[in-house]
Length: 530
Image 1 (cartoon, rainbow, N blue to C red):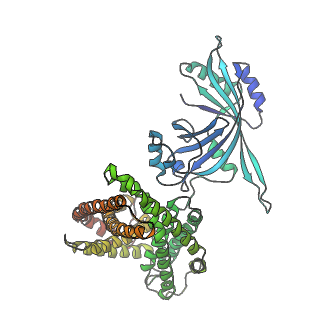
Image 2: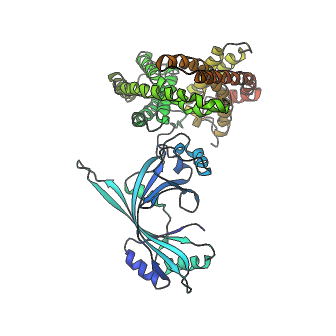
Image 3: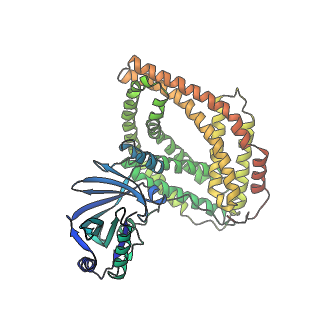
């Protein structure tokens, strides 16, 4: 049976509750516990959004990491640790880690709130003086900062509650205890998880993080809609800056760069919507920002891929690849130092300031640009249809002997198409657009893996020369890296052979019919159930 939790009313003391319970059960006092519960989640609330809670409970005996459901009705795993982990990879390889890894991915576990608890612990004894139940009366406090200039640290009282820990074979005792707690002690079953109570006390609403912008008004002016999307992307960049600076995890830079890339992609599509003279300068600056943040992301990607690289080699060669990991680690430090200088630069500050100012300008009353005042659904449909046809034309020209650059160009076009569809997907029927996105993803995955493998082969060869110049290279490490390049080349050939089938699925008559039906046959909302 799972732990049962009951809230003690604010106007009722812990002592009074204990006294009322004692009238019905024989209690034996145990040693009081003083604990600190550190609730953990990722920046984008992956644990919470999966319906879970991750807490590290610390007391004088050690630290236990518990992963449970929101509401505490189910415990997924409980694991002893010597310190609060930052990444799932910090844990030993167990079933607990593997399951948690599916939720967290590569994101860091960051503290979202600390709760200090004092617990009065009791065991319930039967007539034979045997323990049949354990209860804890727990009083929680969470630190917070008061408003005003002083920002004085205080502690918010979160209330008290009773935790009932059932013991196997004594289900009737549990039922009796629950009845007494509700009818005699005037308690109510807890409906709010302790983590939600703690977060509310410090003014934090879980799950709130910048999501993809929602464009739902089909007749809104196109220039107004575009600026709305651009503002959202700018907010995403700013929101991820601190995580990049602190190097919390690699996803902050990834999300930052995706926002930059989406901004650049949409700017290209804004001809006759926004002033070309105004946005051309912004296009250049966002292009610069994408280039200067690339090397840091490259180091992240190679380090994240390192374990998969090792698996491509025979077991006896894998240890010889370790100098590559050390090389990547050193260069990542250097690249992140350069990245921070970019984020601190006057050029970046001016870009953000001018871009925000431009996006805040009201739409002009007199329209001089052809597409500025048109309904967004008309312009969006035309843009998506145009980029889709470009992708089809490019793909049809890619024969088995076509160079890698042809597939790379198609990849870039597909990325533009994906961005456009995702920006405006809420204007169309959800089930049909989802089918288009899914088929596009399959093709993108093939093109993306192919391009990554091409670049990885070239880059690892460069790493060999760089490592030779920096620290020297043993024959074993050179052989391991050359073997890695060979294995990547083999994989690259297999992925290339899969392209024709993936593109055939994407360009199928049924898919083409769906694109045409959604994006060319109407000049008004493609209404219906979403």
